[in-house]
Length: 280
Image 1 (cartoon, rainbow, N blue to C red):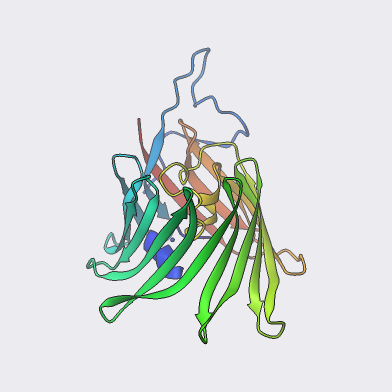
Image 2 (cartoon, rainbow, N blue to C red):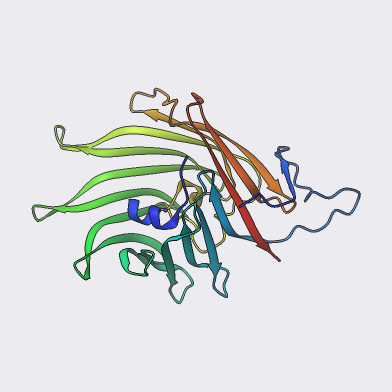
């Protein structure tokens, strides 16, 4: 499964369950209460997520309830790294910085906007005491939703698109992704595979925390609900059984996920992620 370890996610390009949880009952959004007057659901913000290997991440927020810092820990409780988030005057993410366990810089991302929409992202590596530009991403939209992300690199003085993802939505959830890479033989982008997504109707812990549409972090940030199934196919449409998975979700009384249990189609791998929250 994908580990939502923020420093690892940045370098790659991102406890026990809460006491009140239940198995998914489809579209049952009654807040866990009974009778004619169920208690009102609260707005919650995840403050910790952990994986079945013992690693975990704690999260703190600024006054706008946007993620301010994520601290990654290994299974012994030792700090493995920090990720800090900075926002612009429009309260949109402008910079994300990854640091090692000693707060020494490792990488950073800078986010640029046009007309209020994120239109490009630049990633910098930290080498020999300074940041060096590594790769950039160009972002296109269909209305308010991201429709395409192109990976742009400079080669021999020329700027070329070396990869591309195209996104399709159903409602407010991203349900299909087509991925392309530059083929040196054809000297053009060629389809490498597709991914289809299915969702529940409950609230996602990754939505509404200042990181909406952050495609570089994880697919979960592209939607408002929680992924229940991912089907990965190769360029010929053949399902990759070891990369596709079903996700069983348990929920808190406020209808946020408390536990994801992901199992690949071929049952070769199982992964568990547990969430805890602050609610108001």
